[in-house]
Structure formats: C-alpha cells, structure tokens
Image 1 (cartoon, one colour):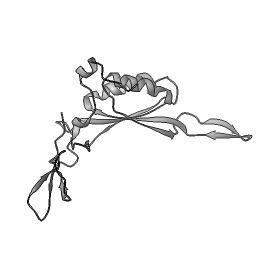
Image 2 (spheres, rainbow, N blue to C red):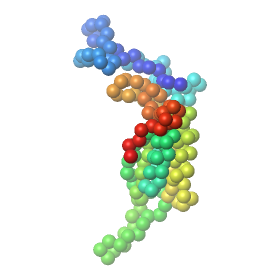
Image 3 (cartoon, rainbow, N blue to C red):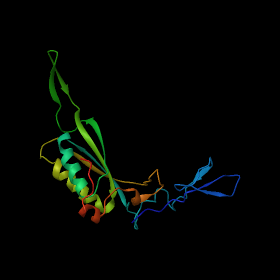
Length: 180
C-alpha cells in the first residue's frame, strides 16, 4: 500500500493563491506547505498501524557484498547504499606488528549495506543477505530492520512506496539492463 501523497502546494501568507510545485511548474519564493497526515509520522503506515516501508541495515564482511548485490539486482532490488565502516563486537581484534611493537586493532572493517524496501519485500532481502553473508564464524555481521516514517523522492515529490526502485516482475523476466 502506498503512503499518502503530499499536497504539493505553496502559499504566500499574504496571498490566497496557490502555486503548483510539481515538475515543470514554476517555482516562486513562497512558503511551502505540505499537507500533514492525520497522525504525525503516519504517512508510510499500512492499515493497522504497521509501517509499509522498511529500511534494512546490514553490517557485513567485504567479501560478502558482491554476491549480495548481484542477487538483489537479479531479484529486482537495484537501489542500495554502502559505506565502509569500522566497529567492534564479538570478533576479536587483530594483533599486528608495527615498527617492532605489537598493536591490537580492536575495530574491524565492515561494509554497511542499506536498502529501503516495501514491507512485503523485507523477508526476501534479509534472506538474500543471510544466504551470502553467513559463514558460521564470529564476525559475520548483523542485520537491522527499521520502520521508515516517510520516503520522498526529491526530484518529483513522490512519496511512500512510489519512491522505491524495485523492478516489476515483467522487468525482471525481460532482464533488466545491468551496469556491468
């Protein structure tokens, strides 16, 4: 279910005229008013109060990234963000020799993978990450699934699930063009 669409109108407090802010329309230096949902932060909620858009954050080993990215692309999830991060957990630090002294490096390099998907696609993405990141050793990483209060495409003003870059079944079957 898509989130409520924003009311993309701008009004000048001294003027009752409204200006349409959709693409292709002229912009003026007026105050932008987005119509708020009935409950703050409720624009991306499905009936019953559950969020319909989720953000999946996974901290994984570097070598697990390429198989995960490839399978997510094949399954129709081309949009993701990665960051190189360092952190500590149960995995022990590395002891390294530096100029005749031994140093313990307690933070380990990982990749932070971020994917925003419709609630119904969460299981598919999480299973894909686990399948490729799990080695059974300490340090495989962690996955967090978070609710997304609101999602807005800056260029068009689209809101909710409409901003997600998932491919349709037809696009997947036709072989979505890949950047390889």
